[in-house]
Length: 310
Image 1 (cartoon, rainbow, N blue to C red):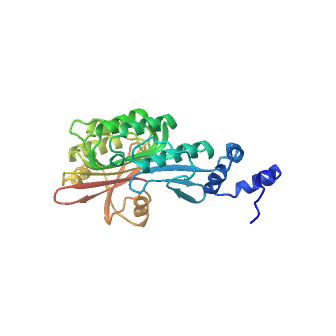
Image 2 (image 1 turned 30 degrees about the vertical axis):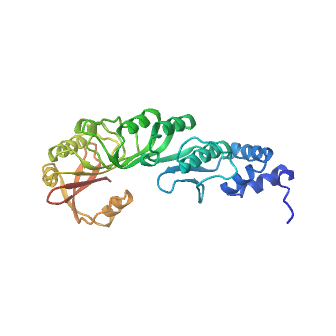
Image 3 (image 1 turned 180 degrees about the vertical axis):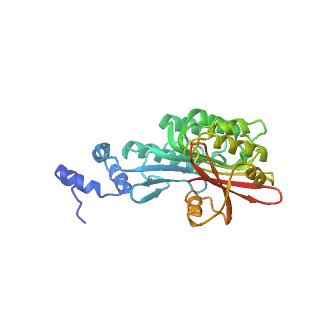
């Protein structure tokens, strides 16, 4: 089959051809020669079009997206270079560097399972910091093991500007972590280390805490401070689970209006993925006139408070 002389085309024709190629095709083209690599880089430098994310977990991959998504686990033909003992992680690191160089795109999201890196967590964080320090979303997990020192080290060296997710981790009783300001979403499964004083200072738009140490009285104090415009002025949605069965009584002690969870209110909960089958709730009003609907899912031992701003 005859070869297609892409690099010999007039500039406009060549750019039109490059513009309809997928990122995987552009990567393959860049690997043909030094000239083709330079051509792809120059084209994407003036027409950036892709976003990317990297997942270091079971079945690690890189996702490149525009109007569609493309996944890859390695880039063939890259020079052999050993950075990490785990072959999968090593391939991800090489691909990460090449995609940033050739496709001229930053990575929006990094998801790391520390249990996949074994004893190379710090080494991986140092390498990642050398490539990119700021991400929209940082998600950390750890197969329900304690990686407190590594979590703190990562948060000291990298920055999440949009979402911070901590799941499947265990924390020591004295663990402390500074939470970034201005997050869209803060999700912490084992949130026992976030005590009331720190919770009250958070300014995230959406918060999900499981296994929270807060008491029903502290939930009351939080809602009262929100109603007085004293805390959580940016809060749009909250889901928090605590080991106290009487949170609903704390809510009822505040000025409120009992409401039926109709389709409109349920739609507000669904849009933030707070799915529940509750049929009754309470509207509370902030001193500036803003209204939030709260409802409580209660068992014999726990309470889960849902909160959504209208």
